[in-house]
Amino acid sequence: DTGVSQDPRHKITKRGQNVTFRCDPISEHNRLYWYRQTLGQGPEFLTYFQNEAQLEKSRLLSDRFSAERPKGSFSTLEIQRTEQGDSAMYLCASSFQGRGQGLFGPGTRLTVL
Amino acid sequence: KQEVTQIPAALSVPEGENLVLNCSFTDSAIYNLQWFRQDPGKGLTSLLLIQSSQREQTSGRLNASLDKSSGRSTLYIAASQPGDSATYLCAVKGLPGGTSYGKLTFGQGTILTVHP
Image (cartoon, rainbow over all chains, first blue to last red; front, side):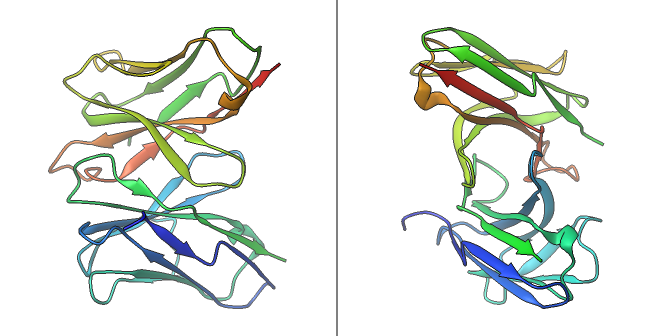
């Protein structure tokens, strides 16, 4: 394992299009978190999984957002009908249980034109 | 609801200066506090993690302190270098069993510029 990886690193899309991001956590980490960071702000929690179960979703996660972790390994975050306000850095992190410092991936930068 | 505030929002110092970044949080029931570094357009790199039972942690030129009862933490950087220029974020994790356990609540960050 070389760390948490995210793909793509950058995504430019037009308003109204759907986008999907992928996160591959550390293999032995059972928790996976998604955060969103807009320019000049700290990251904000979106949702997290323990194994394949999605245990919490922030009110920031509107019904246009959906996240999955089908086999308890990688996760995907899909945004439907993107809006300009969705432009942000989407960060993924993983940890074993809720302990420890967790590790963050490099993020996916989304730009909605 | 936990809120984290960082002061100052931006700081510019000459190389070699010692500096302090401040972080405050509203709910003292935390599991730990973490300081991160973020370079422009990049992800987060963990610098120091302080458990709620600890008062401080040190790594090289960095020293972080925690006063849980007053809801404050400071990050001290000694002998700053241009390579220290980045955004520094502090984040707190809630207690086990609580709704915030596992997830981090971040401050908005301090943008540090160290000029030669």
